[in-house]
Length: 351
Image 1 (tube, helix red, strand yellow):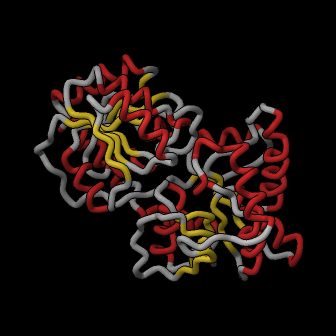
Image 2 (image 1 turned 90 degrees about the vertical axis):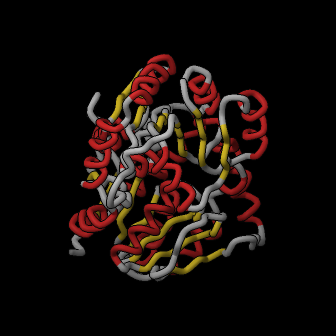
Image 3 (image 1 turned 90 degrees about the horizontal axis):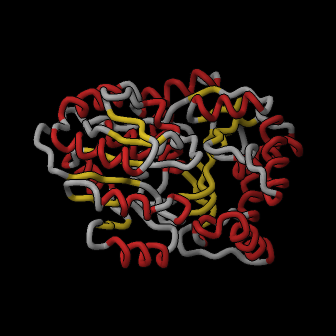
């Protein structure tokens, strides 16, 4: 059994692929190392294009052009490498492909050799209504139809796929819950993400001006110009960390009183939400994020509608974070990486 992921960079999809490989002992194939700072010790892996290497020929240039049309706000590192998608068809054996673009490899391989594959779909293009999504939608339909097993990360995504005629199993991401959690918390609100303009960082800036505590936005930024513009406008009330090592991020979770994360029809859970809960941090999320499925209103956090409500709830938590934090920790303990790997094996018939 293999696992394949297109990019190794600081976001939830490659983190999931790495931890799956670690806890299943399956071989991990990475199409391109785009600068992710992951601990790969104990993981059997192959990287097709190492960090700093550039592709040659027409396909890499075409890939950059196509990606800029669909996701220019995510920067050059988000490029969907068509040449590596083709190269990865050399992978032998039953393989779980993370996202529909890596799934192109599985589709092509099956059409050529008959070899089966599974797909883990993190976000779907099937509901995209703009004309530019016509080709991605058709591509995704074919990949879904040919996959032996389809897995997704939330009930919300599962229901969308069902409406479009596809069945999928829900396997939530995992985390490493802390063995113990601190009873001493700073008046600190954090948000953790891979930041780009589509994540609407200005909303967090507005929250920071309403919250009665310190506000930190942690994580990499897809484009440096987006970060600079944000810091010019909100740098007086927000601390922007940029990329953090795992130990730095865990330290932040241990100190924080609350985490806030908004999504905009982002049906995946958001890895930072689950990781924060694993360290006893209550969470505030909006209706547009898949992690709302993990929140028990008023018990381990809050699901809110807008910035005003989020700010009010954050101030409420800052005054007494421990009761909700302990419940958040209990939620996370049921969603460890060990649990994730066990569920994955069950769904794929590899137990």
